[in-house]
Length: 102
Image (cartoon, one colour):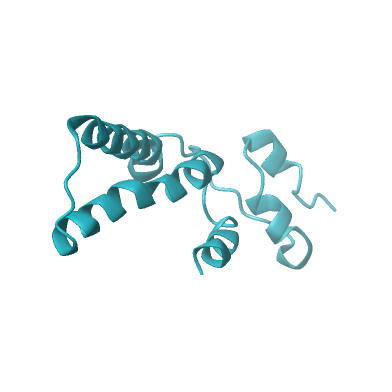
């Protein structure tokens, strides 16, 4: 189930997050096994889980703060032909290349 969900979510998530998101299962499973199974872990295992959580937060920070968002809005002039291509552009020059001048 998790593999199927990862395939479907890969369209909407940035690349670095795709790599780190499956690693979130480590601290989650540690918390659940600690709560339900009363499992004990060493300080090194807790440190490893903390590093994973820190890595996820570092990757999520630019996404959540919208720090790298462009300062322009790309709007397709001819929505029937250019809308999908225009949304994929990452530069203002690339976006303006879809303007219909005729």
